Image (cartoon, rainbow, N blue to C red; front, side):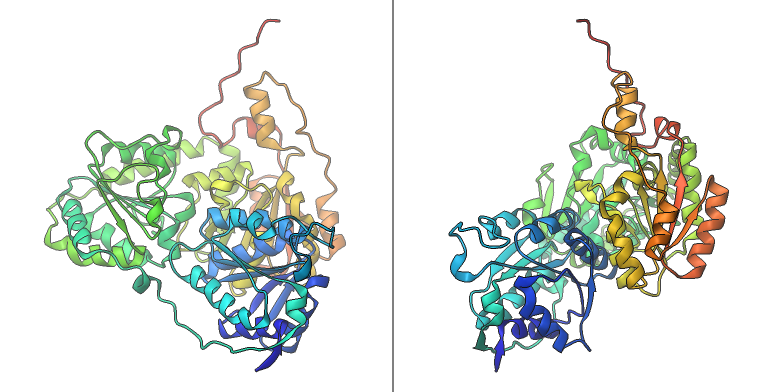
Length: 555
């Protein structure tokens, strides 16, 4: 069929089931955007005020829906602006498709100073994506899109980038569109039968088995299989911050955070780590290491992750859903009789809750968030003290894909825009974004996107007029050498209202409860500013242990 490269792109995305695209148009994308306009009954373009927001929103959309999140940006500075969001999606194993423009084909690599030119763009972005590919003719576009979708749906989900020069988007070619393909991750990555049998025997014979569950379990939609295996083994499930919600925190077997990690890891005799890098095994600061003589079974869809942080007794390269289903079928014939561990596990949970309650300011606000947000409501955390309290395991999570962090990237400022994408992907659910004033201002301009497109997100800004955690470290560890952390903020309530967003201010947990409840019930874009005293961070939630003061050095 004769069509432009832009039309080939639009039609290929349509074939692959992409409907929502987070975009910031520009001159190199003109023919792509026009082709999307031609299919406006199918596509929804959510346009932002900064390219960084396009990739963050695509990530939030992807991680909460389980579908591919798509962003569209101009080359050079546009793609570099989006790179922070791609890096976060890469860390959190999120299936984000980034479509980027390029300069004219005949100018690539010449360094003549074409608009938006950067050297080796494809190689540059490869650091934060699973694969990157460029189309040089319209006829190549369906195949490139199909390969991108294959990478997003098979193996370890991570961002993928494709780029198309403007002359290729404009040029007419004889394009053959591909038929839709059904992707089944568990079928693409089955587990070795003999390895599963050995793992089932090890787990079944264990006295104190432990399951460590990461984001790979959520990516594989394997939470039902996880819960059943935990029940069969009467095993606690220690979830990473990126894997929260795979088992409901109402289950006495559900754990996360440093307190539980130290207690459970040290006493386990067989550990099943599934869909996680298993950093806790080699990082005492995250909770210590395995007890002496403990056996480790590691399951990961990415063979390169098996044994990266600790050599396992048994490594299995397989999809989490396929592997857990296989273990559920096999463990019962090896399973030993075990006394109930419910009283023991509830005691560990109680001690963890007691420790977290010591951060009284953060706990007060954090529990209001939990009590007012529905079970299926989505909380997008941030690099702020209440966020650290939530991330560490104190915030109960009841359903899969309802709690987002920035993973090991720790990307300050990711939260607001990511939450916007989560809300776009879950129009019928309540979504709350929590931010510090420092991080919120990274994407404050997206209040415009929120208002213009009526995205009913409730955004909370805990405002202490500082980069609070850095100031905390300077105060406690560096003898009050406070520098470059004090901030000057606008009146955030007035700012929200200037953009057309409902603005509220709430001082104290009970006022916050009343305000949050009203904002959620209204179902409209809203911002709640919560003034925070500077002292709140000094007894803060991250890290849990007090920082020792740095000794004064003589001159």
